[in-house]
Amino acid sequence: MLTNDQLAKWDRENFFHPSTNLGQFARGEGPQRIVTGGSGVHITDRDGTQLLDGFAGLYCVNVGYGRTEISEAIAKQAHELAYYHAYAGHGSEASITLSKMVMDRAPKNMARVYFGLGGSDANETNIKLIWYYNNILGRPEKKKIISRWRGYHGSGLMTGSLTGLELFHKKFDLPLAQVIHTEAPYYFRRPDLTMSEAQFTAHCVAELEALIEREGPDTIAAFIGEPVLGTGGIVPPPEGYWPAIQEVLDKHDILLVVDEVVTGFGRLGSMFGSDHYGVKPDLITSAKGLTSAYAPLSASIVGQRMWDVLCRGTDEYGVLGHGWTYSAHPIGAAAGIANLELIDKLGLVENAAKTGAYLVSTMREALGDHPNVGEVRGEGMLCAVELVAERDGRRFFDASEGKGAKVVAAMLERGVIARAMPQGDILGFAPPLCLTTEEADKIVSVTRDAVTAIL
Ligand code: PLP
Image 1 (cartoon, rainbow, N blue to C red):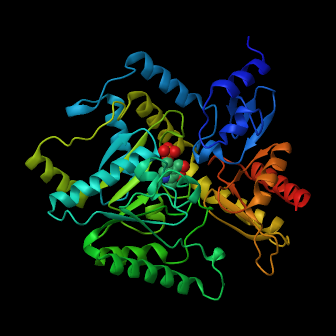
Image 2 (cartoon, rainbow, N blue to C red; image 1 turned 90 degrees about the vertical axis):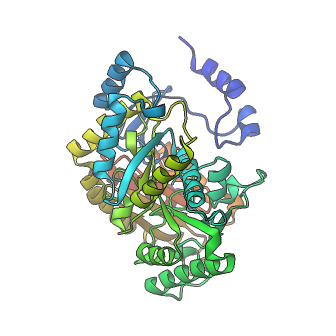
Image 3 (tube, protein in one colour; image 1 turned 90 degrees about the horizontal axis):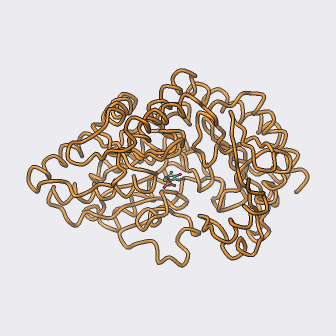
């Protein structure tokens, strides 16, 4: 059996970790954790430390760890048919069944689902479909995509460009030219707080409309956004934001892509954020919650008006030249079926609404008055605590102080995982949807202790 020291050494010497300070890690600095097991909302590492995972991995293990219903479905599928492709009309029983289950849960105006592997490739698919759509409609100039500052849509070439966070652009020659960014609906970070929620919505909508006019509506193909800004800070939209945005897009014949990689399949306490906020997307991007990350799988769900044009395109030009070897992988599909069944059986969408609201309200009670907590916010099973140097003057900490990361480290010592969001000192929480009120209490008390110890 390998010793912990041996594995840690191999890790530092061989493994290129994503989103990591590479030099530091290679020199033996910075965090390192080798995780061996998980059960419910807890993970265990090789040292035997048990941690309550308040971020469900990367907001993805929605049903919690160690669900044998899913692991057994994966094993069965691997024995029977580990792989067959989905090109040219081929498929597996699992992938076809999952397509039906996804469409049964999707908003009513959606027509088909395309399976990929993760959120980034699903967004790449979506952008290609949008460009194809406008080419078939004979408007090759209508190609730009609007996304929001602080949005997160992946870290590929196009998806990294859509992402509106500096970390993902720096030194990569991103964003690409077809991408333009508009203001994030993030009231707390405005220089002044003089607007009402409704006025702030009107302001964001006016900013979007001004951008569309400036660029020319005939050059803009689509708008992409997460129902609740996720990696950009876990920020629910102001009242009325989504329907008002949709109205502007409809006026200018601009498609709406709702990126539900985090929110899809229950996290907001509704099956989809699009239904939660009352919008009709042309495309939905989903991944994480589709299989609760038991196997990699994404879904691009295509709305009816796009689907009709895609069919016209292939009637005219032949096969749609887009596909991955692992599109609709049977093992991912088997995981997806078992996962969606479990979500229904355990009532996890309802629990996300109920226990999520409890988490946000107890966090607010415990920390709302702390002089270094500017705001506690959330929606469904998503919660954020925004740290500030001074609450009253709303002065933020200097990024170099790394206060958010320090609080998160202090929480780890106390047995709870939170995420220091990449921009700003924001503690992020996105626990598995099976969280109980006792587990929520533990997250809150550890957060309060850590904030008090560090600030
Ligand atoms: N879109 C959103 C909203 C996400 O949060 C993420 C990942 O966190 C992605 C897309 C990219 O997904 P992936 O990391 O699976 O490529």
